[in-house]
Length: 277
Image 1 (cartoon, helix red, strand yellow):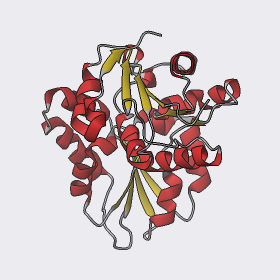
Image 2 (tube, helix red, strand yellow):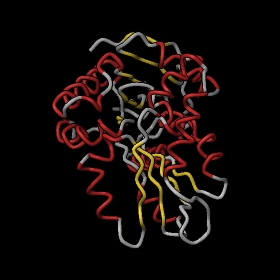
Image 3 (cartoon, helix red, strand yellow):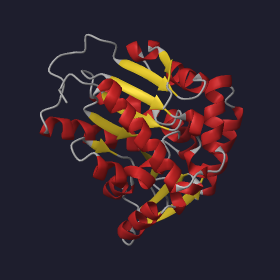
């Protein structure tokens, strides 16, 4: 692999666009290939064997077709189910996963009460339970399974209708309890699903400007940059080819709409291609 090769970014749908946005901001000199596996989504309703098989198929295809220099798993479910297996099978390739950013939250909270918004599948995963158990103690985590919110954000990308998304934001944020910077209040809120940062400004308004929002995509972008730097794989010059290529195993409508709605600059005009693997 060479420093001029693109970085692969992978999700089962559009949630990874929030991670892609953070990567584009942190690594402006790089090229990216985003692969959405929407034809086989949602991963959260499948067993680990299915998720591992799909993740391996996507990774192998990106290596073969694009010679990617790193692989970012922009999906909590795929990271939990397949991350370790992919690293064992591809020891020469930097593979960066994502998880709810509980540890960064412990470093910024002052009230020692942290809210976590995530999907029910993520909160039930062994990877999350281990992380939660390891970090609980001095910090209390208030967990909220935000049923319906990710799906509403997906629909909003296509329809531009915000009412249902906003109603669910109000419902789930309100259920966390008192938010603010006073003793006993939640002063830090972890966005534990990659969909949620796409509507972070609206979550912030509902939660209060006094509450810190933690976007895991920013930590993933920093980690990716650090790994590429350590391995001498940062791009030496700005890309002469398109900044972003988009692939989708489904009809691509949701992914195309999400990119147009939530990305900026040249990446917004990326051409969407079918992806069969």
